[in-house]
Length: 193
Image 1 (tube, rainbow, N blue to C red):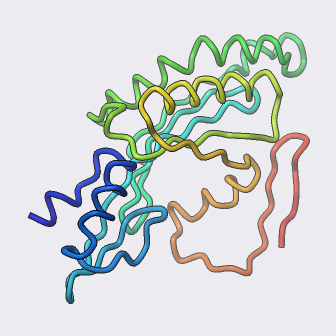
Image 2: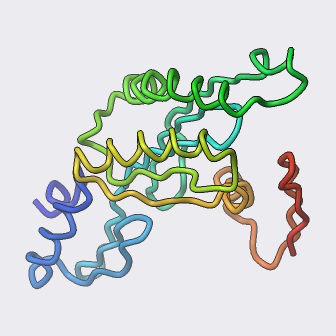
Image 3: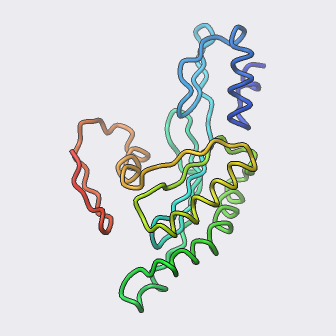
């Protein structure tokens, strides 16, 4: 019965139910970015489904990540705008914003369809908060806020540059700090130590 109870469908409901059931389940060891619960000598790691939305410049990207001990990208969809901007010799912010607006809903639907999950299965939504083009960021923010608010899902803003560093851990969980990271990202190219 505990395993069935611990399968999350909604982050907020799980936290509330967990707190109410705490005396019966055991000790909450960690809740971020996934639940780890210990009952006696048995440890339960409960997966979280996180929808990530990226719209900082000239690509719209949506991905669904499962956090269950290790990170796993269940699906990702990207719509590039390189061809749209090529004739101008660089990114035109207004064209980028309009293209994000036209693509973001379809990409999100495609990711959810490909994974067999629905919005109600999401435990968290993350989005790029910057740096990036203001209009492009606002499209992602508006979409993510609307989706999160209407479905009562926690919303977590993510720094675009820091996310580049952290993304290396998805396929390489053995990487340890301290480290040196080179981010090559347009005007935000940086060497971190």
